[in-house]
Image (tube, rainbow, N blue to C red; front, side):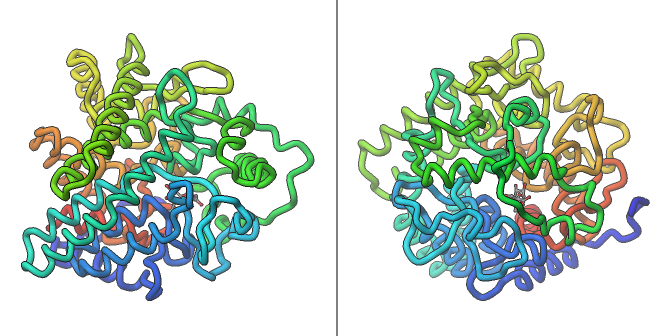
Length: 447
Ligand code: 9WN
């Protein structure tokens, strides 16, 4: 562990290696999120993987998202994991116990929660890529975009119908895993109120056996809480209304809300092009506007940073993390707030920190007490998060900023290890290597 990185791959070699990671992680049925640590399909990983795959094999990219959406619950939820029959990951389908959930899908086993709604973004990106390719690819991507649109709409509708409970208008999560940023300090305060008590059925973690250094992963105490929330949901039979009513963790997630707003915009663009019903386009416009207002309304009056909201304790969560920059993803905050956020992002507290190997925004500011450069969502840099900001900046017309993020992302990942996350100062890859979504975003940056 530790130390500087000896290898820097030239771009064509890096692209070839990234392509090989996606090929090697392909079980034939799905492309797993990572070879050993995550031997299943994850929802937001699959979206990024499809973007990377679109460069290599469009039909395979389409198949990936079709597989994910075949597992969509009957109420519209896209589950965060679609299980393969590999049993190397815990918690697996038996622990989730979703087989008898009223709204569960038929014929596949899934977890019982969701992840960030980035799927419309992936579909649009696939379309853009296919349009630079052959007429057949273009036609294939258009057919796919048209056919998946109603499922994307019902996924978005589920988030509004079941997950927008409070007056803040923020989309609520019932588990830190739903945020995709599992142990981010964003969730420390609400998790402190989650008490596993003595009714938590025993379990054995498998992740820490695979990741050599257990301190790069969440702690056992955190896992107890993660598992307790699953236990609560099981007891509620995964009835969403009941889960939202009773879960001991209910937090308005500003990052998801921002992604939702911009994904609704994207769905409107796709739906307009492919002749979807006007009433549905109007719904999406209304949802996007509400979500954007919620993000803007969460901004701290001094720092400008967007905040999550603990909906159980009814208070803002002031912990500053990468999610504080959410208004930059979706727009809608006053110009002056946006300017403040952009200069903060450039400052030595974030991308401009002189110690960083590459100016990629870390998950937590290196200046923040409690920043841990090696532990998961508590400090390391995550290439996919960098991709999202770069994508959003390009969409907003900030091309120079988008270019810089892409270059920084490539600098971080040119070791060719495709780390799940990176130590910001040394650039050491942490967690899993050959992580599919890292390979996928590198491919997108390179092409
Ligand atoms: C729990 C697969 C997933 C990502 C998440 C990341 C991590 C899982 C875990 O791996 O979470 O969902 O077991 O740690 O936090 O963002 O989708 O790559």
